[in-house]
Structures are given as C-alpha cells and as structure tokens.
Image 1 (cartoon, each protein chain N blue to C red):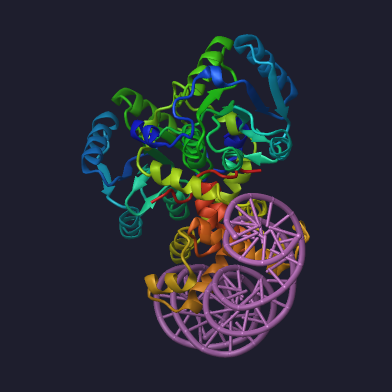
Image 2 (image 1 turned 135 degrees about the vertical axis):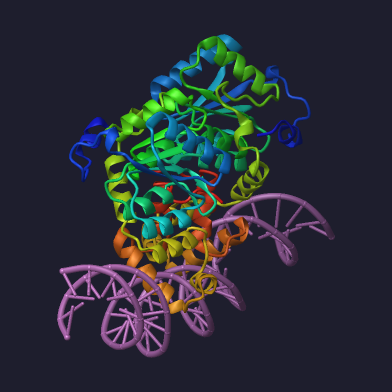
Length: 235
Length: 235
DNA sequence: GAATGCCATGACCGCAGCCGCCATGCAGGC
DNA sequence: GCCTGCATGGCGGCTGCGGTCATGGCATTC
C-alpha cells in the first residue's frame, strides 16, 4: 500500500477521531482472546459497548439486528472465513467503519492482501497492551497502521489494482460469496448445488453474476483472481 | 521441511562429498550474477568446468547436448520459468543431482515450496562470498540448507504431501508442462491450441494426461494444485 | 404501486473432459 | 537385421458439464 493510495482511499466520515468510537465489535472465535481484547478496550478507552461475535456469520447477523458499530476488530482465522473474505464481507456491510485485522501471521503477502481489501490496519496478536492501544487509537483517527516488520514497498506494483479487485469482490452477495468459495475449492456446479440445496441452474446464474462482477470469463480466471487477493486461505 | 522428511528423501549417490562436484551448471538470466557466481566457484572450489545458461529452455537443451553436470545453481526468476517450475523440470531431467535455488526473495512460503519441489537448498543473492561457499559445500555433501530467517516448523503440516505433489508434477512431459502453464493463466483450450499451433483435440488429450498424473478431475483443481506448490508465479 | 435487489428455475449452446485410434522415436530382446 | 514394447505427440467423435438468456417469486424501499 503506497502512501498515495492511502490518501486516495475515500472515507465517509471526513475527519474521524478516536473519541467518536463508542461502540465496538470484536470478531474472534477464541474466547480468551476475545475477553482479553474486550477488557483492554474497556479500560484503556473507557468503552462500555463492546460487542463480540465468534464467527463471521454471527457478526453479520448481529450487525443486521443491533446496527453498525463504530469500529471492528477482526480475527484473520475464523472458522467460517479465512483470509481476506472477512474484511470484504464486513466492508460491504459497513462502508466507512474502520476494520482492524488481528493475527499471529505476519507474512508480508497476507498483510498487503488485507490492506488492499480495505482494512484500516493490521496488528499482531503478540503485541503489548500499550502498543495495541496506541495502534488502535491511530487507526481510529484515520491512520493506516501496519507492523514494523512489514515493508509496503516490496510489492508496490499492482497494489492499486488489487484494491480495485477487492472492491469488486465486496459487491458480491452472501450467496455469491458462498458459491465462489466452493468454486475456489475446485467443486463442480453439481456438487455446489447439492451442498447449498439449490438447483444446478441457480448455481450457474450466480456464477454468471460473479464472473460479470469480477470481470472474469472462465471459472479458472475467477479462481486465480480470488487467490491473488487471498480471498480464501487454504482450509 | 522436517528433519525426518530430509532423512527420508532418497538420494541416488549414497554418500556424496563436495569433492565429487567437478562440473557445475549455473542457470541465471542476469549476466552479472552469472559471471560473479562462476568466478567465485572457480576460485573457491577450483572448478574448471562451469557452464551457464540464461533460461530454463537453454539449460534443458544444454544438458541434453552436453550431458549432466554434477550440480546446478538455479535462479528463481527466469524469463521462462518463475517459481518452482524450474526445479521440477530440472529434477525430471537430472534425478539425484543437487539443485540449489538462489533468489532475492526470502519469503517463507516460497522457500518451503522450493524445498518441497526437491531443491537441495535455498540461498540469498545478497549472501557474502564466504557464506555462499560454505552453504554450497554443505549442500554438495548432502545437507539441506535454508536461510537462517526461515523457520520450517511454521508450515510443518502438509509438507510431505506437497513434496509428493511436486514429484507428480515432475512426471509431466515438456508439452504437458507448457499446457498446464497456460491453463494456470486461465486460458481456454481453444486459445491454448492456437498458441501452441496444435488442434484443440490434442490439447484436451494432454490435459486428460495431466489430470491423471496430478490426480485432479476438474481443471480448476489443477490450477489450485499448481498454485499450492507455487509451480508458476505471477507473470 | 413501482422500483430495486436477491434468490431461484428451465431451456439452449458451446466447450470441457473422456474415449478410441494413429504416427513417430527409442530402447531392449530374438 | 527385425520385432516388440513403451513413451510422446497428435487427431476426431461423443457425452455431459459450464456459461448465457429469459423469466418469475419474494422481500425491502421509496
């Protein structure tokens, strides 16, 4: 992510400050980490409304029922969403809300994929409490925060293109996302229709819509595009 | 690559020593790096026969004409072969000959992919001369050498499976490899047939053979398998 | 009520995948 | 020599899946 690209990113709220963050949503399947994060946030930021969800599906449902939070902290390895899928899904539902990725994996390619997908920042699970709080405050003030060991210059080329691609993936409906995930597992249309309990014809129309949205013609191209932004990690 | 996996790897010569390496082949498209390597090897190991090739195709042709060298040093980013393809191709032609990967990219996933594909070791382009010579000597004595910053334990699971997969890819004929590369670019059979100037029916036959060899049913699965061992990098 | 977005279905057509078959080149056995 | 066996590359036909189109139901929103 180049500095220019960061500046160019459109944000709905013109000049956010950390004070405006009053309600936060933590999405993590590890209860311990969930509690630890919630506690830290309550103490350090004086937040009362800390909501939690154990899966991506639960988070989506909760946002639909209880409304949008002011910020999200999202685990990278959820049971139902590995890789950039979580960011993409939540950004579709919460445009303008800062999403912070948290993970133990500090691989450069994964970080740049997350940032290109529209994350506000990426922090390590093994960060000290002070560093964690500081990173989150800076993110909520609009800054893009990445780990020190991450050098964005390494893959400068094609970065804006990946961000554009991530934006396209963000337009996929939930059902389309499910189907794309199965496609990226090498499943045939008939298998997909069976797993989702719909007709094969329906699968095909969804696929046509997906192809159109991400600008692919063959399904192999769709797989390559999804892999290039690390939409689904191995699993 | 676990220690157990290293021990288990079959080597044709029972106990190789660095002294047995008399003729070496350097495959690198960068002339400067090529010369520097050749000079270093001549001085440090007293080697007279240092052959060079500027592309994978040239290397394959040269081996066919001039016979097998005792060791190979292979650049990761050749004009006609990025990623693990170079290792796989050369291992098919030179079973038992130690192949050393050399690259500026020290990303963990790339290193483990190279090792799983059957490389004897992986060294950085920015290594000092002493360290380079030492690494090569150890490799030629049968040791598997990886950079210090690389932690093989990070992706221990599925590693043996990847090595098995790489062995399967090594059975592909040159024509089949060409076709697989085009498949992994999202090309349709008709396009492939045009690019290779053969009938579409022929492309299909080759694809059937490829599928059978790598144990895939749908072409999307073939793409995923190739990507999982990083057979072809983006480009 | 009209408009929009999401999901679902069946019919049509071209390509993907599997089959059988043929040509060439190269090894080993008679 | 010859023949056989095997690997590789090439071809066309058949079946079924992949991809497009036109259509309709069902929510939400204006």
